[in-house]
Image (cartoon, rainbow, N blue to C red; front, side, top):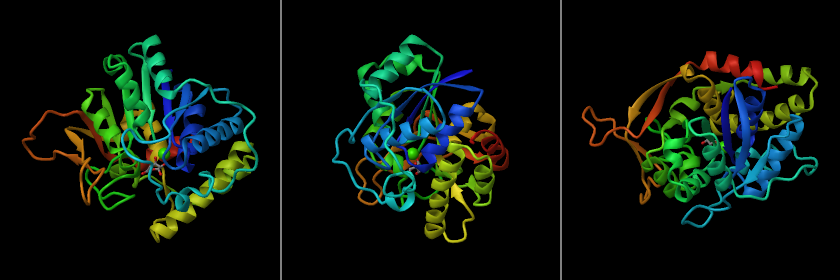
Length: 309
Ligand code: BDR
Ligand code: CA
Protein backbone atom coordinates (compact mmCIF):
# COMPACT_ATOMS: atom_id res chain seq x y z
CA UNK A 1 0.00 0.00 0.00
CA UNK A 2 1.20 3.47 -0.88
CA UNK A 3 1.31 5.81 2.11
CA UNK A 4 -0.17 9.22 1.40
CA UNK A 5 -0.83 12.56 3.04
CA UNK A 6 -3.72 14.31 1.32
CA UNK A 7 -3.75 18.11 1.53
CA UNK A 8 -7.20 19.60 0.86
CA UNK A 9 -9.35 22.75 0.87
CA UNK A 10 -12.62 20.80 1.06
CA UNK A 11 -14.55 21.67 -1.44
CA UNK A 12 -16.83 19.26 -3.36
CA UNK A 13 -14.22 17.66 -5.60
CA UNK A 14 -11.93 17.50 -2.56
CA UNK A 15 -14.69 15.50 -0.82
CA UNK A 16 -14.80 13.10 -3.76
CA UNK A 17 -10.99 12.81 -3.62
CA UNK A 18 -11.08 12.03 0.11
CA UNK A 19 -13.67 9.26 -0.38
CA UNK A 20 -11.74 7.81 -3.33
CA UNK A 21 -8.47 7.79 -1.35
CA UNK A 22 -9.97 6.35 1.84
CA UNK A 23 -11.74 3.59 -0.12
CA UNK A 24 -8.72 2.71 -2.24
CA UNK A 25 -7.07 -0.58 -1.24
CA UNK A 26 -3.89 0.73 -2.88
CA UNK A 27 -3.56 3.66 -0.49
CA UNK A 28 -2.98 4.11 3.21
CA UNK A 29 -4.07 7.62 4.18
CA UNK A 30 -1.75 8.75 6.99
CA UNK A 31 -3.61 12.01 7.47
CA UNK A 32 -5.63 14.69 5.74
CA UNK A 33 -4.17 18.17 6.11
CA UNK A 34 -6.27 21.24 5.41
CA UNK A 35 -5.73 24.75 4.10
CA UNK A 36 -7.69 27.80 2.98
CA UNK A 37 -8.84 27.95 -0.62
CA UNK A 38 -12.34 27.02 -1.67
CA UNK A 39 -13.34 27.97 1.88
CA UNK A 40 -11.56 29.13 5.04
CA UNK A 41 -9.22 26.67 6.70
CA UNK A 42 -11.70 26.26 9.55
CA UNK A 43 -14.46 25.37 7.09
CA UNK A 44 -12.13 23.07 5.15
CA UNK A 45 -11.29 21.25 8.39
CA UNK A 46 -14.95 20.98 9.37
CA UNK A 47 -15.95 19.73 5.92
CA UNK A 48 -13.13 17.18 5.91
CA UNK A 49 -14.25 15.85 9.29
CA UNK A 50 -17.85 15.64 8.05
CA UNK A 51 -16.83 13.64 4.98
CA UNK A 52 -14.61 11.31 7.03
CA UNK A 53 -17.45 10.74 9.52
CA UNK A 54 -19.72 9.74 6.66
CA UNK A 55 -16.96 7.32 5.61
CA UNK A 56 -16.70 5.93 9.18
CA UNK A 57 -13.00 6.77 8.96
CA UNK A 58 -10.70 7.69 11.84
CA UNK A 59 -7.98 9.14 9.62
CA UNK A 60 -6.51 12.17 11.46
CA UNK A 61 -7.29 15.67 10.21
CA UNK A 62 -4.65 18.34 10.71
CA UNK A 63 -5.42 22.02 10.06
CA UNK A 64 -2.86 24.21 8.33
CA UNK A 65 -2.53 27.57 6.63
CA UNK A 66 -5.27 30.17 6.97
CA UNK A 67 -3.79 32.53 4.39
CA UNK A 68 -1.21 32.77 1.62
CA UNK A 69 2.48 33.12 2.46
CA UNK A 70 2.76 36.81 1.61
CA UNK A 71 -0.62 38.04 0.42
CA UNK A 72 -3.93 38.89 2.00
CA UNK A 73 -6.48 36.15 1.55
CA UNK A 74 -8.58 36.71 -1.57
CA UNK A 75 -12.22 35.82 -1.72
CA UNK A 76 -12.67 33.79 -4.89
CA UNK A 77 -16.00 33.06 -6.48
CA UNK A 78 -16.03 29.48 -5.31
CA UNK A 79 -19.34 29.68 -3.41
CA UNK A 80 -20.83 29.55 -6.88
CA UNK A 81 -19.07 26.25 -7.53
CA UNK A 82 -18.94 24.73 -4.05
CA UNK A 83 -21.89 26.34 -2.21
CA UNK A 84 -21.99 28.59 0.85
CA UNK A 85 -20.60 25.85 3.11
CA UNK A 86 -18.13 24.51 0.53
CA UNK A 87 -19.94 21.18 0.25
CA UNK A 88 -22.91 22.14 -1.90
CA UNK A 89 -25.04 23.41 1.00
CA UNK A 90 -25.36 19.88 2.40
CA UNK A 91 -24.02 20.66 5.88
CA UNK A 92 -26.63 19.55 8.40
CA UNK A 93 -24.60 19.16 11.60
CA UNK A 94 -21.18 19.98 12.95
CA UNK A 95 -18.78 17.01 13.08
CA UNK A 96 -18.44 15.07 16.35
CA UNK A 97 -14.73 14.47 15.99
CA UNK A 98 -11.99 17.07 16.50
CA UNK A 99 -9.00 17.84 14.33
CA UNK A 100 -5.51 17.40 15.80
CA UNK A 101 -4.00 20.51 17.36
CA UNK A 102 -0.63 20.40 15.55
CA UNK A 103 -0.02 22.32 12.30
CA UNK A 104 -0.36 20.61 8.91
CA UNK A 105 3.19 21.58 7.91
CA UNK A 106 4.60 19.87 11.02
CA UNK A 107 2.53 16.78 10.35
CA UNK A 108 3.86 16.56 6.78
CA UNK A 109 7.46 16.90 8.00
CA UNK A 110 6.97 14.29 10.74
CA UNK A 111 5.42 11.72 8.44
CA UNK A 112 8.11 12.12 5.79
CA UNK A 113 10.86 11.85 8.41
CA UNK A 114 9.33 8.76 10.04
CA UNK A 115 8.82 7.02 6.68
CA UNK A 116 11.71 8.13 4.45
CA UNK A 117 11.19 7.40 0.76
CA UNK A 118 7.70 6.09 1.37
CA UNK A 119 5.31 9.03 1.58
CA UNK A 120 3.44 10.46 -1.38
CA UNK A 121 1.98 13.90 -0.74
CA UNK A 122 -1.11 14.70 -2.77
CA UNK A 123 -2.08 18.37 -2.75
CA UNK A 124 -5.48 19.40 -4.07
CA UNK A 125 -5.61 22.92 -2.64
CA UNK A 126 -3.12 25.77 -2.35
CA UNK A 127 0.54 24.83 -1.95
CA UNK A 128 0.94 26.82 1.26
CA UNK A 129 1.20 23.88 3.69
CA UNK A 130 3.74 22.08 1.54
CA UNK A 131 5.81 25.26 1.08
CA UNK A 132 5.82 25.78 4.86
CA UNK A 133 6.85 22.17 5.39
CA UNK A 134 9.79 22.52 2.98
CA UNK A 135 10.85 25.80 4.61
CA UNK A 136 10.81 24.14 7.99
CA UNK A 137 12.63 20.97 6.91
CA UNK A 138 14.30 21.29 3.49
CA UNK A 139 15.53 17.69 3.70
CA UNK A 140 12.00 16.41 3.00
CA UNK A 141 12.60 17.33 -0.64
CA UNK A 142 14.76 14.23 -1.00
CA UNK A 143 12.90 12.13 1.57
CA UNK A 144 9.43 12.07 -0.03
CA UNK A 145 8.49 9.40 -2.52
CA UNK A 146 6.79 12.02 -4.66
CA UNK A 147 4.33 14.90 -4.72
CA UNK A 148 1.23 14.87 -6.89
CA UNK A 149 -0.21 18.35 -7.29
CA UNK A 150 -3.65 19.22 -8.60
CA UNK A 151 -2.96 22.66 -9.93
CA UNK A 152 -2.01 24.75 -12.89
CA UNK A 153 -2.92 25.01 -16.52
CA UNK A 154 0.19 24.63 -18.64
CA UNK A 155 -1.23 24.09 -22.12
CA UNK A 156 -4.77 25.40 -21.60
CA UNK A 157 -6.45 28.52 -20.20
CA UNK A 158 -7.10 29.07 -16.51
CA UNK A 159 -10.33 28.85 -14.55
CA UNK A 160 -10.19 31.46 -11.76
CA UNK A 161 -8.73 33.96 -14.26
CA UNK A 162 -8.09 33.57 -18.00
CA UNK A 163 -4.47 32.69 -17.15
CA UNK A 164 -4.51 30.98 -13.78
CA UNK A 165 -5.87 27.86 -12.17
CA UNK A 166 -7.47 28.41 -8.74
CA UNK A 167 -5.09 26.42 -6.50
CA UNK A 168 -1.98 28.15 -7.88
CA UNK A 169 -3.63 31.60 -8.01
CA UNK A 170 -4.65 31.38 -4.35
CA UNK A 171 -0.98 31.38 -3.27
CA UNK A 172 1.33 31.85 -6.26
CA UNK A 173 4.48 32.38 -4.17
CA UNK A 174 3.91 29.12 -2.31
CA UNK A 175 3.50 27.30 -5.62
CA UNK A 176 6.64 28.87 -7.08
CA UNK A 177 8.58 28.00 -3.94
CA UNK A 178 7.51 24.36 -4.16
CA UNK A 179 8.26 24.23 -7.90
CA UNK A 180 11.79 25.55 -7.30
CA UNK A 181 12.48 23.33 -4.30
CA UNK A 182 13.63 20.26 -6.20
CA UNK A 183 10.89 18.06 -4.73
CA UNK A 184 9.74 15.46 -7.29
CA UNK A 185 6.43 16.67 -8.73
CA UNK A 186 3.74 15.32 -10.99
CA UNK A 187 1.49 18.20 -12.02
CA UNK A 188 -2.15 17.30 -12.63
CA UNK A 189 -3.54 20.50 -14.09
CA UNK A 190 -6.61 21.65 -15.99
CA UNK A 191 -4.81 20.25 -19.07
CA UNK A 192 -6.16 16.86 -18.00
CA UNK A 193 -8.71 17.43 -15.25
CA UNK A 194 -11.11 19.28 -17.56
CA UNK A 195 -11.22 16.09 -19.63
CA UNK A 196 -12.39 13.91 -16.74
CA UNK A 197 -16.08 14.63 -16.45
CA UNK A 198 -18.57 12.98 -14.13
CA UNK A 199 -22.08 12.87 -15.64
CA UNK A 200 -25.24 13.54 -13.61
CA UNK A 201 -26.63 10.07 -14.36
CA UNK A 202 -24.17 8.29 -12.03
CA UNK A 203 -25.57 10.02 -8.96
CA UNK A 204 -28.65 7.80 -8.84
CA UNK A 205 -26.43 4.73 -8.50
CA UNK A 206 -24.68 6.40 -5.55
CA UNK A 207 -28.07 7.05 -3.91
CA UNK A 208 -29.18 3.50 -4.63
CA UNK A 209 -26.36 2.22 -2.42
CA UNK A 210 -28.27 3.81 0.46
CA UNK A 211 -25.15 4.61 2.48
CA UNK A 212 -24.51 7.86 4.35
CA UNK A 213 -21.53 8.68 2.16
CA UNK A 214 -23.43 7.78 -1.03
CA UNK A 215 -26.23 10.23 -0.20
CA UNK A 216 -23.86 12.99 0.96
CA UNK A 217 -21.63 12.81 -2.12
CA UNK A 218 -24.60 12.54 -4.49
CA UNK A 219 -26.25 15.61 -2.95
CA UNK A 220 -23.13 17.78 -3.05
CA UNK A 221 -22.10 16.57 -6.51
CA UNK A 222 -25.55 17.42 -7.88
CA UNK A 223 -24.89 21.02 -6.78
CA UNK A 224 -21.41 20.90 -8.35
CA UNK A 225 -22.69 19.58 -11.68
CA UNK A 226 -25.37 22.31 -11.70
CA UNK A 227 -22.65 24.93 -11.22
CA UNK A 228 -20.57 23.41 -14.02
CA UNK A 229 -23.55 23.50 -16.35
CA UNK A 230 -24.01 27.21 -15.52
CA UNK A 231 -20.34 28.01 -16.09
CA UNK A 232 -19.75 25.73 -19.06
CA UNK A 233 -23.14 25.26 -20.80
CA UNK A 234 -23.43 21.84 -22.42
CA UNK A 235 -20.32 20.43 -20.72
CA UNK A 236 -22.20 17.29 -19.60
CA UNK A 237 -20.88 16.91 -16.05
CA UNK A 238 -18.38 18.23 -13.54
CA UNK A 239 -14.60 18.06 -13.71
CA UNK A 240 -12.97 15.57 -11.36
CA UNK A 241 -9.96 17.79 -10.63
CA UNK A 242 -8.98 16.54 -7.18
CA UNK A 243 -9.95 12.88 -7.65
CA UNK A 244 -7.69 12.71 -10.71
CA UNK A 245 -4.68 13.68 -8.56
CA UNK A 246 -5.52 10.75 -6.27
CA UNK A 247 -5.98 8.54 -9.34
CA UNK A 248 -2.54 9.49 -10.67
CA UNK A 249 -0.99 8.60 -7.30
CA UNK A 250 -2.69 5.21 -7.45
CA UNK A 251 -1.93 4.50 -11.09
CA UNK A 252 0.34 6.82 -13.08
CA UNK A 253 -0.80 5.01 -16.23
CA UNK A 254 -4.05 6.97 -16.19
CA UNK A 255 -2.06 9.86 -17.68
CA UNK A 256 0.74 10.64 -20.10
CA UNK A 257 3.35 13.05 -18.74
CA UNK A 258 6.19 15.07 -20.17
CA UNK A 259 9.18 16.36 -18.17
CA UNK A 260 9.11 20.14 -18.22
CA UNK A 261 10.41 23.27 -16.54
CA UNK A 262 7.45 25.14 -15.10
CA UNK A 263 7.43 28.48 -13.28
CA UNK A 264 4.64 30.46 -11.69
CA UNK A 265 4.06 34.06 -12.67
CA UNK A 266 4.12 35.83 -9.30
CA UNK A 267 4.08 39.38 -10.67
CA UNK A 268 1.75 39.32 -13.65
CA UNK A 269 -0.71 42.10 -14.30
CA UNK A 270 -3.05 39.86 -16.26
CA UNK A 271 -1.41 36.52 -15.64
CA UNK A 272 -0.76 36.31 -11.90
CA UNK A 273 -0.58 32.64 -10.93
CA UNK A 274 -0.14 31.38 -14.46
CA UNK A 275 1.92 28.19 -14.73
CA UNK A 276 4.39 28.91 -17.51
CA UNK A 277 5.82 25.74 -19.01
CA UNK A 278 8.92 25.91 -21.16
CA UNK A 279 7.50 24.14 -24.19
CA UNK A 280 10.27 25.21 -26.55
CA UNK A 281 12.13 22.49 -28.40
CA UNK A 282 15.31 23.57 -26.62
CA UNK A 283 14.18 24.67 -23.12
CA UNK A 284 16.20 27.19 -21.15
CA UNK A 285 16.34 25.01 -18.03
CA UNK A 286 16.09 21.35 -17.19
CA UNK A 287 12.72 19.92 -16.10
CA UNK A 288 11.48 20.47 -12.54
CA UNK A 289 8.40 18.28 -12.84
CA UNK A 290 6.39 15.86 -14.93
CA UNK A 291 3.35 17.58 -16.41
CA UNK A 292 0.26 15.54 -17.29
CA UNK A 293 -0.74 16.32 -20.84
CA UNK A 294 -3.10 13.46 -21.72
CA UNK A 295 -5.50 11.33 -19.71
CA UNK A 296 -7.28 8.05 -20.35
CA UNK A 297 -10.48 9.53 -18.95
CA UNK A 298 -12.63 6.41 -19.42
CA UNK A 299 -10.17 4.17 -17.61
CA UNK A 300 -9.76 6.64 -14.75
CA UNK A 301 -13.51 7.24 -14.42
CA UNK A 302 -14.20 3.52 -14.28
CA UNK A 303 -11.66 3.09 -11.49
CA UNK A 304 -12.94 6.13 -9.59
CA UNK A 305 -16.55 4.94 -9.82
CA UNK A 306 -15.58 1.46 -8.61
CA UNK A 307 -14.32 2.91 -5.32
CA UNK A 308 -15.77 6.31 -4.46
CA UNK A 309 -19.01 5.24 -2.72
C1 BDR B 1 -9.24 23.30 -8.09
O1 BDR B 1 -9.81 24.47 -7.47
C2 BDR B 1 -10.73 24.10 -6.49
O2 BDR B 1 -11.91 24.86 -6.61
C3 BDR B 1 -11.01 22.64 -6.68
O3 BDR B 1 -11.30 22.02 -5.45
C4 BDR B 1 -9.77 22.12 -7.31
O4 BDR B 1 -8.82 21.74 -6.34
C5 BDR B 1 -9.58 23.30 -9.56
O5 BDR B 1 -9.05 24.43 -10.18
CA1 CA C 1 -9.46 21.49 -4.03
